[in-house]
Image 1 (cartoon, rainbow, N blue to C red):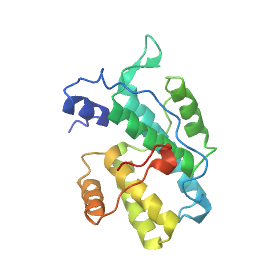
Image 2: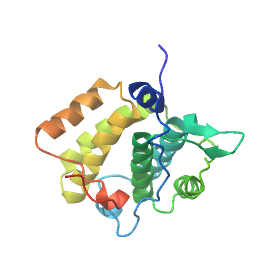
Image 3: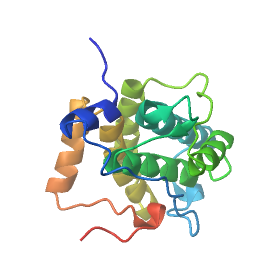
Image 4: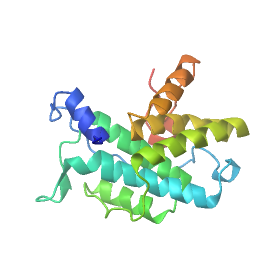
Length: 193
């Protein structure tokens, strides 16, 4: 079975017409923190691993198809792809604000470039499943920060692997239950009405 990157799915679903909606990378909001990392039910090593892999998915899976080697710059990234990349980068930086890979990736994306690939990163399908399981554990742990992080993880698990039916189902049920994901503390944008 051939795995199609999310960016390719967006291009196919928009008929490849991504020039008019090309987006620039805007740095995610980092202060104030969206949640207290000391208060979430995750170990430091987990926070680091999730942060690195979120940044790697943003750069290597979502944005790499739009990298022009000749110009050494990102070109004509569709708005929805860039928005998802910003969500992943923002979440990565909130999980580990001084994490080397995410900090370097954020700085390079600001310049329109991509960092070197992350060594030993998880496959998107495995990472999506792992995020879904972690979202369930955060739900069981309770508390505002855990539940906020759970919401982010549910949406991101679906973004990372749009073919993960368990992730799609979990996020749809989350929304059917009247919940929304407010990315404004991470992206700095106004919440969608």
